[in-house]
Length: 300
Ligand code: 9J3
Ligand code: ZN
Image 1: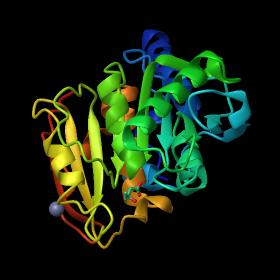
Image 2: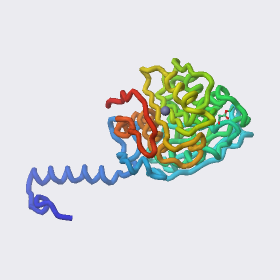
Image 3: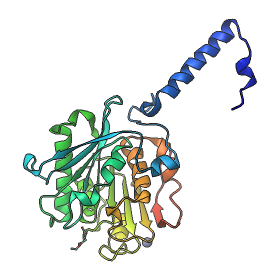
């Protein structure tokens, strides 16, 4: 690396003092690393994002997990809490994630460490029974968030004012039900959602839906797309249709789901406008994205 000519020049007096002060500030900023927080956004966590950081299998935070027995809770079926191990950065926003019809938390487990390592407390849940319908799954997501913030071992690590919900299939339908029931939720992300109800004009929570072009169980034409259209046009909402995907694509590690979910959660749970660059403009059709829709109102 070439040295800038000014760095080798001798300075004296006030100029030298100023140079030293600037060097100290620059040094501290650099040393802060993953824990850097912007003074103007108390909810910002982690370093400035890049395309590769949102696509990575793990973010900057080491993750621990706790198993929650179904016998120790009411209103849902237990689950696993994934959370940043360090307490150095204060509290984190949190999300609960529901599996789909006949499925268990294992079907959405990949999202636990993937999202938690970016700076969220993530609760992947089991439902009371695997046959529970979307409205019940919505209630169970809210019961899980209440357990997480009020009774769990990590309740002190969670900012109870910054919560969100996700879910697959009937769990994605339940994600909309939870948002409708609790407008204080900051973000909702249904994954190849299934819900017979298409009217969601009551929702006030910023919502990102993923559809799959090859979904024959919850075809986008009768589920994800009308569910998106049923949200208020004034809402922060987006629809991303995965290309070459099926109903079960959200059940395995998927970089397209991860990168836009991380960006949505960061933007709306952490108010972190550094992630707007990945959401606006919306992703263009590509090998991974069949189409996208949204109102893109996320101006800083
Ligand atoms: O959770 C889901 O996978 C919903 C799709 C489904 O099986 O609907 C049939 C009733
Ligand atoms: Zn489409």
